[in-house]
Amino acid sequence: MDENDRRAHGFEVRSQVLGQAYVDAAVIGSSALTADFQEYLTRTAWGEIWSRPGLDRKHRSMVTISVLTALGHEHELALHIRAAVQNNGLTPEEVAEVIMHASVYAGLPAANRAMAVAQRELAELGFAQAEPGSGNSG
Image (tube, rainbow, N blue to C red; front, top):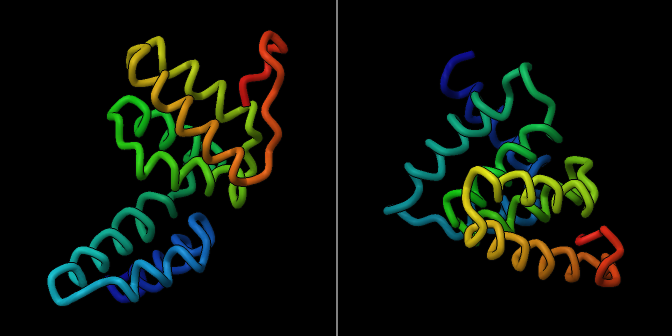
Protein backbone atom coordinates (compact mmCIF):
# COMPACT_ATOMS: atom_id res chain seq x y z
CA MET A 1 0.00 0.00 0.00
CA ASP A 2 1.16 3.52 -0.67
CA GLU A 3 0.67 6.40 1.80
CA ASN A 4 -2.73 7.35 0.37
CA ASP A 5 -3.98 3.77 0.69
CA ARG A 6 -2.64 3.51 4.27
CA ARG A 7 -4.31 6.81 5.15
CA ALA A 8 -7.66 5.72 3.69
CA HIS A 9 -7.46 2.27 5.28
CA GLY A 10 -6.29 3.81 8.55
CA PHE A 11 -9.27 6.16 8.60
CA GLU A 12 -11.60 3.20 8.08
CA VAL A 13 -9.96 1.11 10.85
CA ARG A 14 -9.79 4.07 13.24
CA SER A 15 -13.50 4.71 12.68
CA GLN A 16 -14.37 1.04 13.25
CA VAL A 17 -12.30 0.79 16.44
CA LEU A 18 -13.00 4.17 18.06
CA GLY A 19 -16.36 4.98 16.50
CA GLN A 20 -17.24 7.26 13.61
CA ALA A 21 -18.41 10.12 15.85
CA TYR A 22 -15.09 10.25 17.71
CA VAL A 23 -13.05 10.21 14.49
CA ASP A 24 -15.27 12.82 12.84
CA ALA A 25 -14.83 15.10 15.86
CA ALA A 26 -11.05 14.62 15.78
CA VAL A 27 -10.93 15.49 12.08
CA ILE A 28 -13.24 18.50 12.47
CA GLY A 29 -11.20 19.64 15.47
CA SER A 30 -7.93 19.52 13.60
CA SER A 31 -6.24 22.75 12.56
CA ALA A 32 -3.34 23.80 10.39
CA LEU A 33 -1.15 23.01 13.41
CA THR A 34 -2.55 19.50 14.04
CA ALA A 35 -3.63 18.31 10.57
CA ASP A 36 -0.28 16.70 9.75
CA PHE A 37 -0.29 14.92 13.11
CA GLN A 38 -3.84 13.61 12.55
CA GLU A 39 -2.80 12.28 9.16
CA TYR A 40 0.38 10.72 10.60
CA LEU A 41 -1.40 8.89 13.42
CA THR A 42 -4.19 7.72 11.09
CA ARG A 43 -1.69 6.41 8.56
CA THR A 44 0.74 4.78 11.00
CA ALA A 45 -1.19 3.72 14.12
CA TRP A 46 -4.36 2.74 12.30
CA GLY A 47 -3.29 2.09 8.70
CA GLU A 48 -0.23 0.07 9.67
CA ILE A 49 -0.19 -1.18 13.27
CA TRP A 50 -3.91 -1.76 14.01
CA SER A 51 -4.22 -3.24 10.50
CA ARG A 52 -1.57 -5.93 10.93
CA PRO A 53 -2.86 -9.52 10.84
CA GLY A 54 -0.94 -10.83 13.89
CA LEU A 55 -3.56 -9.86 16.51
CA ASP A 56 -7.29 -9.36 16.27
CA ARG A 57 -8.86 -6.14 17.50
CA LYS A 58 -9.94 -7.62 20.82
CA HIS A 59 -6.36 -8.57 21.65
CA ARG A 60 -5.02 -5.23 20.38
CA SER A 61 -7.50 -3.51 22.68
CA MET A 62 -6.27 -5.60 25.61
CA VAL A 63 -2.65 -4.69 24.90
CA THR A 64 -3.56 -1.04 24.46
CA ILE A 65 -5.46 -0.89 27.76
CA SER A 66 -2.52 -2.52 29.52
CA VAL A 67 0.05 -0.09 28.08
CA LEU A 68 -2.11 2.97 28.74
CA THR A 69 -2.59 1.74 32.31
CA ALA A 70 1.16 1.39 32.76
CA LEU A 71 1.85 4.84 31.37
CA GLY A 72 -0.99 6.57 33.21
CA HIS A 73 -2.55 8.06 30.08
CA GLU A 74 -6.08 8.39 31.47
CA HIS A 75 -7.69 10.26 28.56
CA GLU A 76 -6.57 7.69 26.00
CA LEU A 77 -7.33 4.89 28.48
CA ALA A 78 -10.94 6.06 28.81
CA LEU A 79 -11.28 6.25 25.03
CA HIS A 80 -9.86 2.76 24.51
CA ILE A 81 -11.93 1.18 27.30
CA ARG A 82 -15.08 2.48 25.64
CA ALA A 83 -13.90 1.31 22.22
CA ALA A 84 -12.90 -2.10 23.56
CA VAL A 85 -16.35 -2.72 25.00
CA GLN A 86 -18.49 -1.03 22.35
CA ASN A 87 -16.62 -2.07 19.21
CA ASN A 88 -13.99 -4.71 19.92
CA GLY A 89 -15.75 -7.40 21.94
CA LEU A 90 -14.31 -7.00 25.44
CA THR A 91 -16.55 -7.50 28.43
CA PRO A 92 -16.31 -5.29 31.52
CA GLU A 93 -14.88 -8.31 33.34
CA GLU A 94 -12.12 -8.66 30.74
CA VAL A 95 -11.28 -4.96 31.06
CA ALA A 96 -10.91 -5.44 34.82
CA GLU A 97 -8.74 -8.54 34.31
CA VAL A 98 -6.43 -6.66 31.93
CA ILE A 99 -5.99 -3.89 34.50
CA MET A 100 -5.44 -6.41 37.31
CA HIS A 101 -2.81 -8.16 35.22
CA ALA A 102 -1.14 -4.83 34.41
CA SER A 103 -1.00 -4.01 38.13
CA VAL A 104 1.61 -6.71 38.70
CA TYR A 105 3.93 -5.22 36.08
CA ALA A 106 2.95 -1.54 35.98
CA GLY A 107 2.38 -1.00 39.69
CA LEU A 108 -0.63 -0.73 41.92
CA PRO A 109 -0.98 3.08 41.81
CA ALA A 110 -1.26 3.05 38.00
CA ALA A 111 -3.72 0.15 38.07
CA ASN A 112 -5.74 1.73 40.88
CA ARG A 113 -6.22 4.86 38.80
CA ALA A 114 -6.98 2.79 35.68
CA MET A 115 -9.62 0.81 37.57
CA ALA A 116 -11.30 4.07 38.59
CA VAL A 117 -11.29 5.22 34.95
CA ALA A 118 -12.71 1.86 33.87
CA GLN A 119 -15.44 1.97 36.50
CA ARG A 120 -16.47 5.48 35.41
CA GLU A 121 -16.45 4.66 31.68
CA LEU A 122 -18.29 1.35 32.10
CA ALA A 123 -20.94 3.01 34.28
CA GLU A 124 -21.45 5.65 31.58
CA LEU A 125 -21.92 2.81 29.09
CA GLY A 126 -24.69 1.40 31.29
CA PHE A 127 -22.94 -1.52 32.91
CA ALA A 128 -24.13 -2.09 36.47
CA GLN A 129 -21.56 -2.10 39.21
CA ALA A 130 -20.95 -5.43 40.89
CA GLU A 131 -21.49 -5.90 44.58
CA PRO A 132 -18.30 -5.79 46.68
CA GLY A 133 -16.85 -9.24 47.19
CA SER A 134 -18.62 -10.74 44.17
CA GLY A 135 -15.33 -11.26 42.35
CA ASN A 136 -16.58 -9.04 39.54
CA SER A 137 -14.96 -5.61 39.60
CA GLY A 138 -16.40 -4.45 36.24
